[in-house]
Image (cartoon, rainbow, N blue to C red; front, side):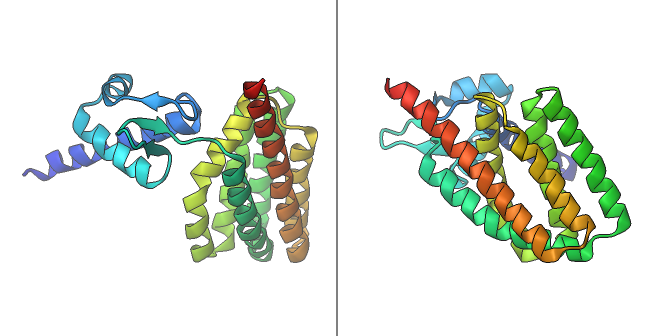
Length: 226
């Protein structure tokens, strides 16, 4: 088979996977929603072959769940899962922030400062989804700075699940001012090359985000039960 044809097919498979995953992360496909292959194919404008491969990958990553009756549904949003994800993040990202403080260059501080400005601007303008996006950009940059390849590899397995929860929370209300201030404090610790301070600031920030996520999810679940 011609190599260009193979590349095109691989691109189609990857694009389908990323497009479907993004719709789950953004809650365009809602938690627990039953989905059908023919509807997903029409939604994404793709044939069944790349779609089935995308579905298999997302089942393996637990974004989609195959039920005993064979039907496919979007994975639930649960208190138990969000606790595990954010607690693990707090440990990993705390040490990543510590290493980032150790490795930080003046250019890194400038780049992080620009990211913080984007975070602050999106918060002030009430663009909660942009606030989440810029926040994750900040976290991803610290991961690059840390040079902790194994830490980052493990964290990347959780990243998109964490992003899904943050986007879900943003769809049901705004983040409070504390989240905005916490990013500033993390940057301050890194700019001061305060390694222990950066580690604790990051851990506190993620645990604070966990508290906000739990409060929002439990509130949503309570409203559904009423």
